[in-house]
Image (cartoon, rainbow, N blue to C red; front, side, top):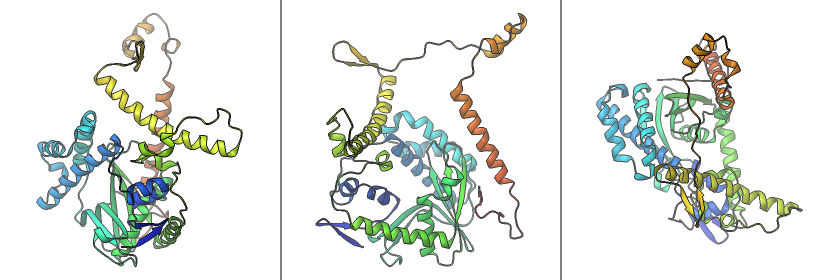
Length: 383
């Protein structure tokens, strides 16, 4: 395993998508790989996703062993698998996770060319295969398929947001997995990375070329050198805060009091922006947890006369069809008495545009080799 010497500490290089995220913040990196902090900040979405992964992996292994397709799985098997893997931390999410796993079983088509499920791939510092525990570059691929010179990597995701094709085409985790496969299987010429959205029951895919992977490797080497240049362990707030499992120990989080209410210098502006980044991340997590608590229990009494709770809607719900009928009977127009929910309409428009683009991509002309005439297809439901 490659070892890095940083500020008098020895850091074992264990490059993976999660390592790269941690390396963006020196404090986050040190807490995990040098101090090896065990007191972790629990994130329900992460626990929820982990549980769904375990269930799908177990069921997929069973399908491969028994040579059956997921839709033939007994309903009890899905439920019992979730019972085994779910923790009490996701108590309020069990219904959702169960629905996702059932949807996966109904829609996922198991291909014949399965190379590995939860496939652990490890490379040493010379990019040769090595035991996963000793690897300098490592990754766990949810599902790996190889057919001839074509590798397809599937990653299960439970996230609510569907990535645009543009974001998927530059997805770093996907590129890293394709790069690992290119080192392990040198005969592979074509690489497809796809995300299977568990809560929606479909996949979106992108491709990588050898040129893409060469550029990725060069950038990776530059990032390694930047880690060696770390000159202090101070936190650097950024997108990584939303994943940080030691954020409750972050020096910025422990010192959120304003030094000066007026921001009159660049230094003060930077400090304020750093604090806000950490505060907003923590506040979002705390509000979500408190909301679930209040739903299951009661409002929270703070002091003698202050209650922190969530206001319940007191509006009445009307049957639109019946109201429209009554208004029509008296020569009134429904539009004079109703307002459209702007948030729902925006979501509807956004969804319809996305579905339209997906339908357009699925109709993309193919060339004589059966591949899209564009360099990167929008969807690849291979297998």
